[in-house]
Amino acid sequence: MPIPDNRPRVFVPEPLPDAAVALLRPVADVRQGVSGRSYGEDELIAELADADAVIITSREKFTRRVVESAPRLRMIT
Image (cartoon, rainbow, N blue to C red; front, top):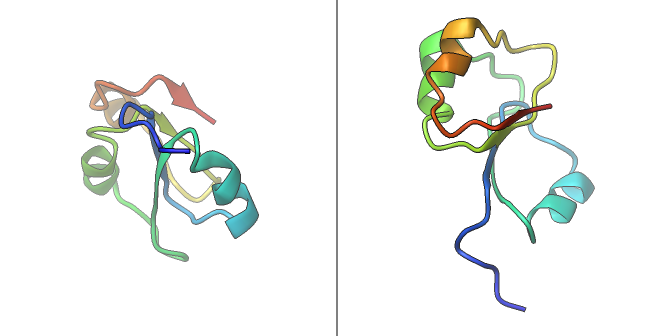
């Protein structure tokens, strides 16, 4: 089955287990960060510029500035 081009873009700063990503890939364009890396505010803003959703852990600090700078962002989980 072909993957549609209009899938939502999901950013995951801390990589998820392969099994979780495998469930997401058919319905979303998943971009994962580097394991163990901590993102600053400006880096998160850049990563979320075209993201529809973000899956976060407690490592990242999603400030008001980060969220307000993400025009497409519809879901934070």
